[in-house]
Image: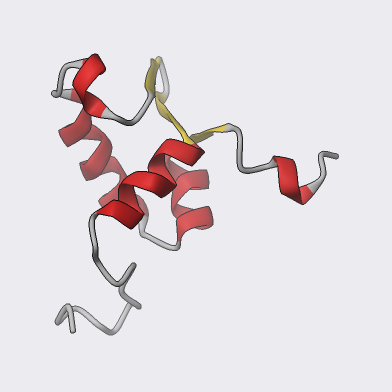
Length: 82
């Protein structure tokens, strides 16, 4: 098994991205769908389309989420966005 320090440089599917970032699967799927429509050279996040869904480059995803300036994922009971 790989060392935890090297696991940041990997392709992940929607479920793995959600588990690693703390966001839910629906948010990650919606985000990928939105990003997929942007021209690849302008997207800033590498995405691969697979027959079973999408893979996303984890370092790009982390940079994108950090750049959004949001406080991060909400817990299940916190839907207010505060």
